[in-house]
Image (cartoon, rainbow, N blue to C red; front, side, top):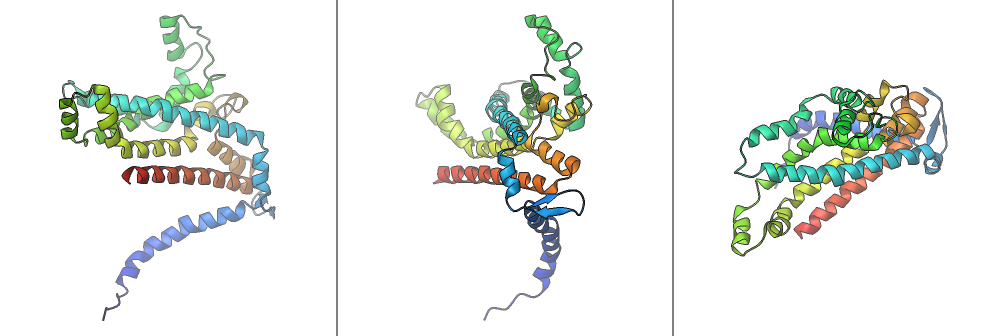
Amino acid sequence: MRERPGPAPYILLAPFLLIFAVFIVYPLIRSLGLATERSFGPGTSDFVGIKNFRLLLIDPLFWKAARNTLVFTLGSVFIQLPLALLLALALNRPTLRGRSFYRLIFFSPQLVGLVFSGMIASLMFEKRTGLINKTLHGIFGFSLDYPWLQVHIMPMLIITALWMYVGFNMVYFLAALQNVDRSLTEAAMIDGASKAQRFFHVTLPAIRPVGAFVVLLSIIGSVQLFELPFIIFSQTPYGGAGPDNGALTLVMYLYREAFETGDLGYASALGWIIAVFLFLAGLGQLVITRGEKA
């Protein structure tokens, strides 16, 4: 007859379960309830059902924030990650001298605080005094008044994020490349496979699980974009969302509705939209990786 476990396992699990219930379960349930209310300040709200979700569908600011977030996400996935993989391939060559130094250089933006990075970006993309415009003017003859912070906001944010995170993603790809079975690569070389064939048929399938994880991580980080544009534009006359809300993202719109407008119900509905999208992205990544293993 099996003996029943004593109280020790439950006592050990109790702190975690308590913290999980207080800081995860209760906020989720409360936010779902708030999404069905219309708030008018602290302690004042009316039940509106799914009206908040219907309002989101016709809210032009929501769609503008969604479009900006989508553009930034596409830039992160289709520009930043391929460059990170190319850097990892270049720095993974055993014959390259100073590999450790180059890895440190590309990873070093991660060692700088996000606030400092945002302030540097706001100075670099200034019209006349910014380093970017001066460099473009000196090399290609572009105008010194190129309006990065006024018109070309999303390209500016994508370039800044590229500088900040390409080295971070490079580390993941480097770790995956160093775990590729060398015997498979050598066998492909003996069979006469070219470098491109070895990459697409040996290396890429071997690092695909890590690649799927990095893509998911990049999507989650991009959808949660808030600090970078807020820091860059908070000290400008346009405010944190930039001119004509050109830097407005979904999380920034959530912040504005919750803490500036005071409508916690509308912000909660927006938060659940973001959560459902991220859940679907994670589910898609899980299905893809399971399909590859099968």
